[in-house]
Length: 243
Image (cartoon, rainbow, N blue to C red; front, side, top):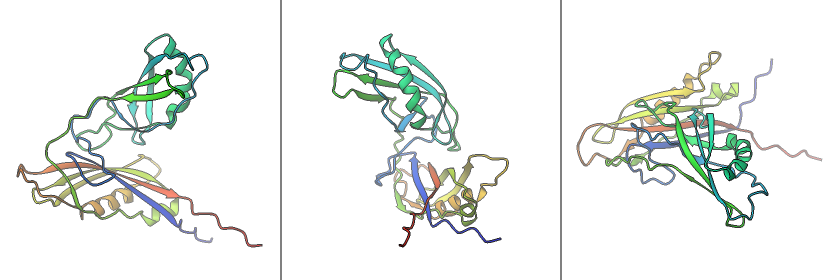
């Protein structure tokens, strides 16, 4: 039986939620403990705006609540329109919400906690075209700064690529006063009874243990940071047929 060709294009996306402000571009800080009950939206798609509201100048909102899954999708969704007019936006929002992505509240191990979140989505029909905005509470910022000094990118496990498996890994990093990583806890998702995704966790741990951070100027001991590594397979470009 011929061996399966190795997928040429592998992507490991690394995003951090540090317990402090990370000045590195593309790295967004997020607290480790006491996550806000409202989720932060990372990706959204605008809904279709019904003719019954377009051009009316109305300003309406819908409160959306649910639980953020490890995949950043919102589950157990509940919609609460703020007015009778806002009900016209319920059907359009149900269509696009599966495309929205949220940052999950994390527990003390930097794992998705399943804590219910709530966000308000407002629509302004006084503009042309109508505009959409979202409101989430400000997150509690920690004062101890964590900056990345040296980074080593995780490597996509070859055996996982052969199987065509992808995954998320949520990791908690313990950093000592000198900026060295002393411990990494990494758990892969999705949790499947028919698949062992441990190689994703192993690759994450191996990479993060080599990271270096700024020393703690305050000298208050260990700092904690959360990192999420997304292991994603991308289809290689199709070759053009020769004539």
